[in-house]
Length: 144
Image (cartoon, rainbow, N blue to C red):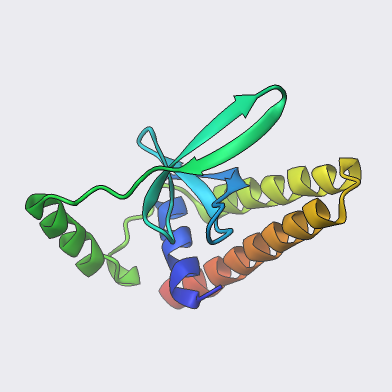
């Protein structure tokens, strides 16, 4: 996974977004929920999580054209991404606990899974989360 995508995911966590246990069917990045919106931060597409007959399906919604004023807002957000300008609403310890809790839930899923492909996906997710934790620690060292 690219450093830029990891940094964007960490930034979402700083803003209070919730990283979900589900991943994008296209790029395998963990999905996030923020202000009532479930989406893939990498593909920049909204996602829908559907439970049907005990199975969970993730579907990406079609890309819609972005209005001009939304483009302007997105440009402002990109400019504000400098780490020195991030306002931390949530403490590192809280983020760390959330991420570690997510890893523990995924480890529990490995124990229950009997399919090698599912185990491989879960291990990949755990690896991505551990990379995010490492990036978060490095970012906080630079800021602090």
